Length: 189
Image (cartoon, one colour):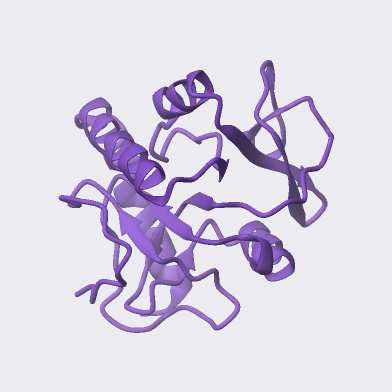
């Protein structure tokens, strides 16, 4: 199986999981993410504004804002993105991605980055939608980011290595099957 075929399979799996107890799954994953943030003592957190097939982290964002955490989200620029503070209102941009109107780039060290994925393989490298936005961002900014945590509703793990060396590598993968947050790289089968 190649990455393109795997991506297509995982996207179909993610689309099917949108309605099937998605609220309950998202709540569980949000709780695991909150625990990860607390355990890492993260104050500066890179998040994402979810698409419909991604884990809805809206309740996590609200909780972290109440706790005065610094939240950064992607702001698309050309073939990559920069980070800006999470602020309302949000605008819908290319590919249906929502982002703040704020264009003030933030370029300091990030304690924890929470990144949506479509799938992965045993190397724990990200398979996304295939546009390369995250790959280009992390290539330029990897020294500023302490930990990268992957998240998706459904576990979608290739049985063989299909990712490339330039694909973003995470330290943990949380999904509906996750029982707890652990930073150890798990052997995923």
